[in-house]
Image 1 (spheres, rainbow, N blue to C red):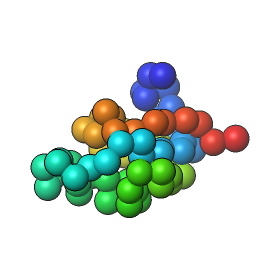
Image 2: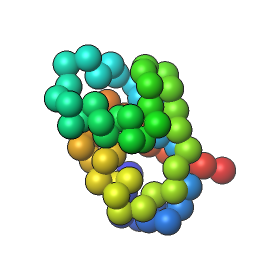
Image 3: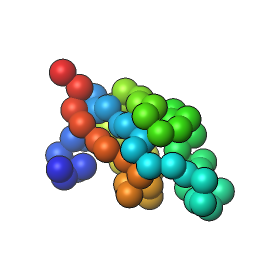
Image 4: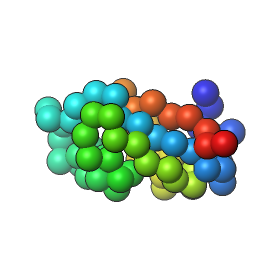
Length: 67
């Protein structure tokens, strides 16, 4: 799924892998996205800053659109 196509739409971001061995910057991105651990999810509006945070930790996340 191309993240640029989701700009200004509501998305659901779910954390599917743990973040214990991440750098502080990547952990900050998870907190900024509202994720607390494996299985937690957050509904966000896909703005440019949010898309940037998702790209930095995309290997830990599953992204979907809200209905």
